[in-house]
Image (cartoon, rainbow, N blue to C red):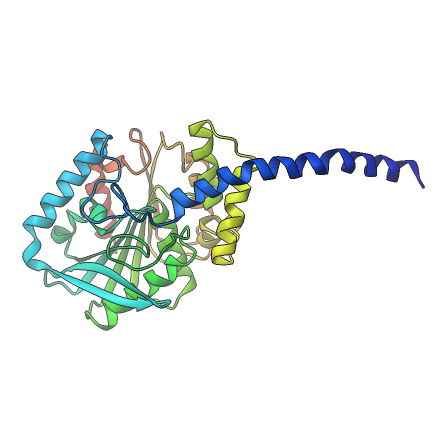
Length: 319
């Protein structure tokens, strides 16, 4: 037997058992991450549930929650509960009918119910839009056991947009997404026949769910390898999609509608350098990237509310 083959066999004999042992030891960690991040809790106290602030210990999150809930109370006369069926699940939301011919749909981050989106929807009445906020599958009043990193939710969003147009008779629909909501909205509009979607606004979009998962692990001081890859495998088993290769980095190359990208220089989860590359790869001839110097991920508006709303309004005025 040639010497190089003997060397390869020896290396594999040494490495493979070690890799197997590592996977056996780390798989329980990956299962715990999947359970806490992707599986609806039986008794959720924060996040996943309507009316609850997802991070009550965070002062900015609490202020966003307070302002959003106050807005919803002020406009409760225009609100009605709505629902659709998709993928065998009853999906619920709230529709604020302000009497306009256009609507904005708000797509929140993972595990956030419709009440989280109130804060971002606040100025849209003045912008001339009806408002739809939704409980993603497995959150709020919507059915479902698992969150799927947008890989199944984008089909739900497609059906919500059709409902806004076909049933609620809105002539145009604008998508405003935050974090994973941005990725989900992008995937819906690039994978479905939705000619009445007039624009996409993306706040804190990442290039792939794997990338944001990896950066979260780094921020928390947790081992990226092999746990991240094990979680990715679990998401693949759930969705049939590889979230290392599927997602905004790929989808954005097919986006040809007006596009506003809002991003923070301090974002450690959706990295600014990756955002710049994605924006450059977008073929839309009507696109704009606006940077915010301060604010953690998904907290750009609370740090600079006037700039945030003016940025959105200036973009809408160009449609």
